[in-house]
Image (cartoon, rainbow, N blue to C red; front, side, top):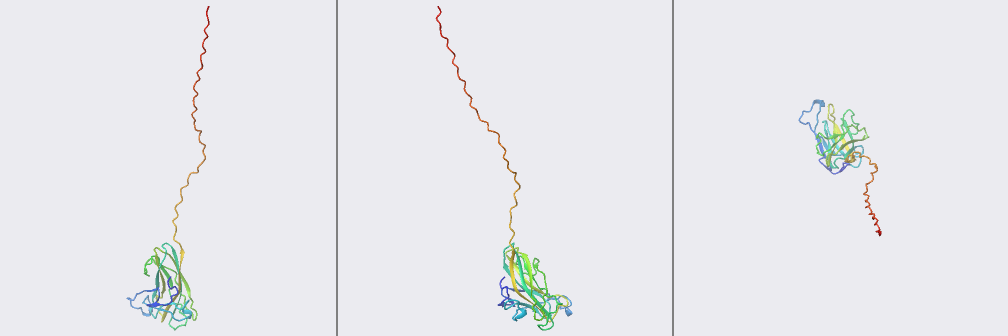
Length: 239
């Protein structure tokens, strides 16, 4: 992750390497007393105050609004190994109150902080294949930042994935004079390598046995008959 600490410089309210996003329902009229879902574009800014508003380093990413509810955050697209699984974590906290800071946050308000990963790196928060992690509402409590770590994991389908951090304060009876969240200390780790393609095992082969071979027939040479000499008669003198 580039600029995981959400440090300076900032552009359009978002930390370097991060880009703002939001869901807008501005075409709908605002319901009286925030009786229904109503979302507007919030503001993004670097948090300059020290103490509980910054988890680590010298800055944190702030997103917030006054009296109007919102769903928004920042995102970043990074290069990855196709087929590998990745775990994205970050820290978040928030505050909703009609009173000025540092009065504790109103815990009745749902802050909807969570992280998301788009496995194909499209960079669109509304993409249907974005995987969102569990959400939470870590409310500040008068001198305590109450930072909570959020996590989400997904398997990359290409050579890029998009990371999202989100606050979602939309909902009935959620409007307050101050509706703010802060993000800090992001991290991306490769949780698992791509699967390896192991060739299937060969079918079992018959076990070779030592079968004795029959003796090889050999040609026995024939012995030629021996010629036996016929005895010659000795002539006798006949008187």
